[in-house]
Amino acid sequence: MTIPSVSIPYNPLTEVTADVGGKENVESLHRIARDFRSDTLTVPTDAQLLYSLRASRGDDVYGEDPSTVALERRVAKLTGKEAAMFAVSGTMTNQLAIRTHMKQPPHSIITDYRAHVHKMEAGGIAMFSQATTHQLFPSNGLYLTAEDIEPQIQLGTNIHIAPTKLICLENTLSGIIFPQEEVVKIGQLAKKHDIGLHLDGARIWNVAADEIEKRGLDAGNEDDRQTVLTDLLAPFDSASLCLSKGLGAPIGSIIIGTKEFIERAKWFRKAFGGGIRQCGGLAASADYALTNHFPRLAYTHHLAKRLEAGLRELGCGIAAPVDTNMVFFQPQQIGLSLDAVTARLAALPNPIIVGRERCVVHHQITPQAIEDFIACIAEMKKEKEANGQVENGEGRIGDKEQQKLDNYNQPKGKTTDAVLRKQAALGY
Ligand SMILES: Cc1ncc(COP(=O)(O)O)c(C=O)c1O
Image (cartoon, helix red, strand yellow):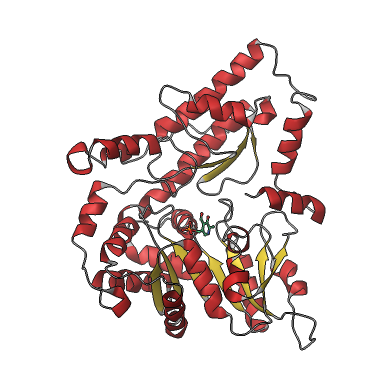
């Protein structure tokens, strides 16, 4: 199905001006508007930083910064939890939350084999929580189910095992939305066995934006956000919500949970050296992003779908469902290597930056960048065809490229552990 080019009701390129932000930051914004490596790359806007200029300037380690307290109360209310705590990064909030759940080794945690908490946080679980991680492979290739998890839970008093104390889920994972019915079932399973349930919700905002759209609600309305976020987070005892990814805060992530949980997490934050003194400006910047950038997330999803459709139409493979803002593309399917495509995009007069097969659409990506991206691949394909190098059917790409492609493909149906482990090593 062809998805026509998408328009958005705001122009991100006007949001840093030479007068306020300076010429270099204007140029930086223009570069980022065509940079698909991550949604962490967004540039704080003039309005956002001017808003943070007016934030309170108290000492948050003393609990005396009203802007930080206001943000924490706002997020706690939005997510239907008793309390929240701001910290510098998603890694820190995940690790603090996990440490807060854990009491005394031996203990263990169940995660997806691709989970950021165990794979991309420098071994923090072992380092800070002294816990073993059991990585599970989703039998459906996309997300864990209660059926996958239940047989792996370690219970009882057998001295050879490290009892399961926590299950960690991630939503979105590779941009894929975790079906809420399954989250609810896993929540019931955790309760049944008296095990904690934590969410790495670095991009739960994208899930909420999608859900708001599906329910016909208004992303700009605080009550509607609250309804949806509260539903999404109800099964979890704790969650880490990044503010510096899709939302576009310059820094920060937040843990939510019960009052008691957050009090204990504050203790660990102090021990990690993570208390921030005059935190108000950071919190206000995130608060601004929540109000003003959250409603943009649905547009980033539309743009991602447009990118997916354009690339599919050209014959590129798409390795994972495009539920939100990520497109994993495989130009190898049309005989173009990822390296060649990346180099060509970067060599455009107005360069487009792509890290690897993962393309992330953030709120400062312009519709023009998406169209230029598709046009560049179309051009490369045409050149290949003219040179007689793109064939249809078997043998169209070399063995090495084919192997790369196989490695990147998401598991489908029942896949052997060996294959899944190989994919886990590549990382999504
Ligand atoms: C799913 C997920 N969780 C957690 C993090 C950690 O966030 P931070 O980079 O702020 O430490 C990331 C970072 O990319 C992430 O993608």
